[in-house]
Amino acid sequence: MSSNRHKKRLVQQGVERLRRKQGWDPAKVVRQSAQDKLQQLDQDSRNHSTYEASQDCPACTDARRESGDDTALCDHHLSKAMGF
Ligand SMILES: [Zn+2]
Image (cartoon, rainbow, N blue to C red):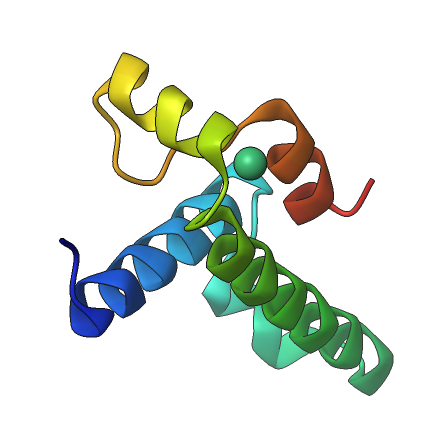
C-alpha cells in the first residue's frame, strides 16, 4: 500500500531523526576531521540500510502502529541503526 516514494520519504525522515537523537550538529561538520566525516558517512549509510530493511520488518511495523510514529524502529533495528 505504501509507494516507493513514500518509503523513501520515511527512510529520509528516520535518518534525520536518528541524527538528532545522536546529537549530530550539521554546523559542526565543517570543523570535523576527514576521518570523522568518513565515519559520519558510514553512519549515514548504515541508517539508510537499516531503515530500508525495517520497512519489511514486522516488529518495526508493530512499533510504528503502537507509537503512531511512522519512523519508529523495533529494538533490533534501533540498535543496528545506532551502531551497536
Ligand atoms: Zn525491525
